[in-house]
Length: 240
Ligand SMILES: [Fe+2]
Image (tube, rainbow, N blue to C red; front, side):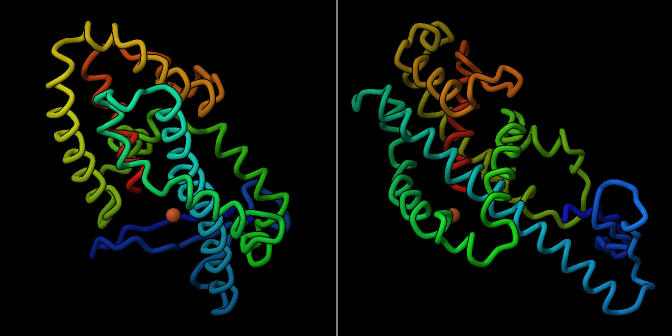
């Protein structure tokens, strides 16, 4: 199921589900469930929503957008930047254990006999399909939390701790990154001339984002500000 949920903001600033439809296309066998339905119908409808949210969270938000993206950043860092490079020194602690944990996940979680296939409704073929679709939707904006929240119109949703905490963490990382990089990159020309940096960014675009200009992922970086944002995104992704 890929349910649609209508949420109502109560006077106490809580979000309450007031209608659920289990499929996205209008049809005879796709009724709208409400809290006024029988207790167990409504409970079951909410369980379907929870289940769908779990699949999306684990495969898209968690596996793809943190573990697997971080692997792209780690491998391209090791491939393109020498150990003496300031970007290597800044980023290498954020690659720590990523390859190891992803190898374990491949073996124990997402393999044919893994936990995902054994215990979840999207295990098996659906898992591949969901991951492929999720991959085709990834954009640069969607991995930069401030742009992402704005684009999805979630600025004023109450009690949204991912956004509130995420903004603070993003800003702290950005301040740190800015401080370190300003020391090495005195102006934009330093960024443009750094061929190792440029090949790192290109490698991520080609192998991580499959050469899709629509993703909005940069193919090169031209300014110190662009570099600071990109590096902040890389660290933030690894923390998530
Ligand atoms: Fe994880």
